[in-house]
Image (cartoon, rainbow, N blue to C red; front, side, top):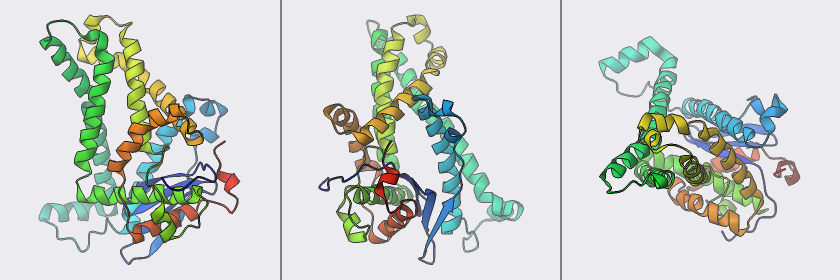
Length: 324
């Protein structure tokens, strides 16, 4: 990070399919690279739950609400980018009889159905891999040990989650399509870093900037993993060992802790966006390191998409998007 911040922005974004979503003082906008080479920039009118009640703006609660909103919005815009980029154009794709039958029956709804099924499968796999598997592995290890290690259950399970998360990200990052998405992720970060450094939003300036940012979703996930170790370790001290050894019961006991961990993680990410002290640096370090996997250096054309998406949501006055 050679550039110095001239202001701290609240602008954030998300990598899409051949595009980037940005959210700033002018709302939510996407920039998508179409098959003809042009960039389609469009604003999206998405109502936020947080704006409907002050209750949803209370610390901790706002983090849970923001996470749910980001998941819903992210899915909708991911679907939009697939259509806008031409990914769901099946005309030039060689199909077998079953695929042709599906296309004829479902028409334009086919991509939405496929994405919907993929999302459901993804949620189930995420639960099994990151929630069930660490508990299952711990119980097996505990059975093999000559003495009980349940006092360390929260810490060991948390450590297993981190190992699984890192291995999972390393494996998926090797997929061709994911690599390209990570390049758009890098362009999103680099564009925002350029803007925060007070430089003109040009391809050459953006290329000089860092692709690592403390408010990234990757950092949020890692902070949640670290916080889960602390919260679950404390919780395990008050739960009988016989209950913890039952995989299903122990998972049900931990479920109410997820919103609390999520809310605390959100508050830390907000804090990290405004501060750069030793506390922030220590907790942010693992997430920033993980961004070496979840972001890749973008090419000039991908950077152009990031610049257009950012320009669409900022104003002429940087104070409009400062973190309150």
